[in-house]
Picture 1 (cartoon, helix red, strand yellow):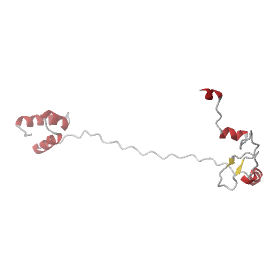
Picture 2 (cartoon, rainbow, N blue to C red):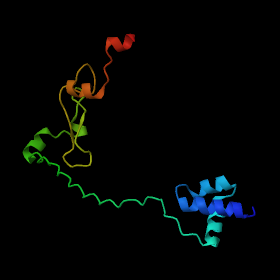
Picture 3 (spheres, rainbow, N blue to C red):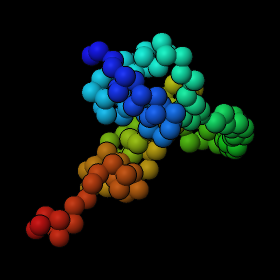
Length: 139
């Protein structure tokens, strides 16, 4: 586009208003925003105020202090030896539910009496098996 006196005066008027963006001025004049900025610079027009809002610096959050977990004391050695059942100590009618971490030296099995030919006692059967109710089977 060739800039004529009419388009230059319109550019100066819109530029001084400052109410619209350089893109909008370009749309009204039929040119790009870069053409508007370049011509304004060559004409020596005053720089426009930057309307970009700067981000507000926020204070850094203070680190949260995590609560310490309570560690339960380990069973005494007397109790451990009394209740410790290794895999080789189990019989078919004894609960095979693992107790503790297999990597620990005091790892053992429940050993309570099993129910209905299952490998677990009543308590551990409820943990091990999903018992479906009659309502769920019908639905």
